[in-house]
Image (tube, rainbow, N blue to C red; front, side):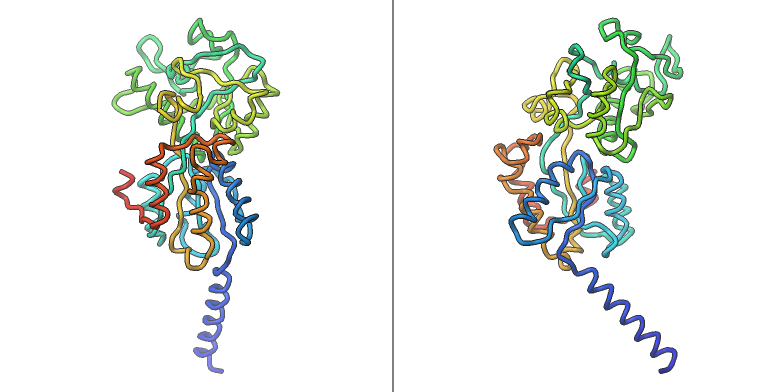
Length: 337
């Protein structure tokens, strides 16, 4: 066999193997630790009731999941990514650059970010400014921005506990961290008026804010051991641990279902997942899973996911989101601006 023919045969064989490997019936999912409990419930239900393999799901954080999702097409990349914030325009553009050009966006519900502590402590009411002054890398003192000097909550405001400031929080790859920076840091810094036109989001790195990883359950566990600390995590994790964890009020509003759903609670955000439509032909069950996730039985006001902490969208918004998934509506850059 001549060299050209031999090379052609080998290449064809490799392509054939790759094609067979890519055609599969097990869905691969990555993304947000906040969405993970809800998606895990749906994956288990999907595996138990449809005859399809239970999808493989990994908690990588929203940013990490979107990065993997946008790496390109093929077996080495996920089919679906969960996110506790909306995809950024820059992430969409990176997807396009890597050939991921047909994406459907699914909005599944709402969630609140809580500042939790051991249930053995007294109740606390923070303002957004209190929280900002505790975690910002630089804060205004006597008209100048200086490295954050606060080590005790009572130094910020005499009404706050006489306790050392110690906060377990999510890393930079987490959608919870993104939402915290947007909903707390940006808003509070703009209200303070000492940071120019743009919101200030740099978090101190002197050990007061402790990067606790992507798993919110680990933050909850640490609060049971480190009873003087606070932790930043999603409402669903509070709902699952009310026997050991309580949440601070923020601006006088407690993190409760109605307050989060209505937007009265100031640190509320939406939850999403994204579908790589270019994988749908090779991964046959992908849309069966997506449509199951969007059913009223799951995300409706009396759905299974509500029992584990999901805050339902208004009925009209649920129906609109459900229809976008059913239609495989293609996300555009303009949608994200």
